[in-house]
Length: 123
Image (cartoon, rainbow, N blue to C red; front, side):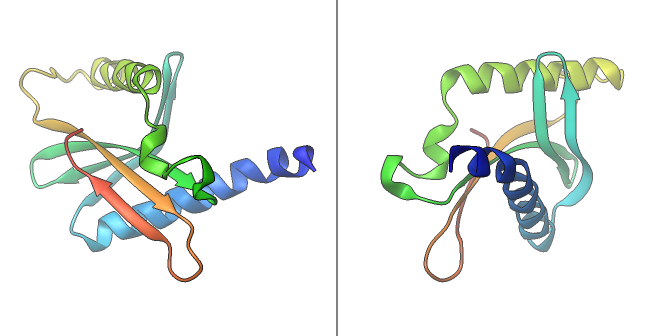
């Protein structure tokens, strides 16, 4: 059974990120890119909120027995995420001191009805 979960994990992750993108676009943000990857990590979504670049980490939990989705953005993950953001700035010749930006966390917890979305801005 464990191998089934491992095989489905990327599919479920992609669906959660697509759901998050739609949710954020419906909230007025403008899509820039998805799944920005570099050696140090990955940024799930990059959007713009007016003049602010928004780097979004999407977390999905199908079961709350071990905590909610947002609880899984721990310090080690945050360090890798920030490193990937710095790489993005460097690759796009942007200065993080002069470009308005923030890190948002969007948690999606599966419930019996609609998914429960928790959007934490500027974490």
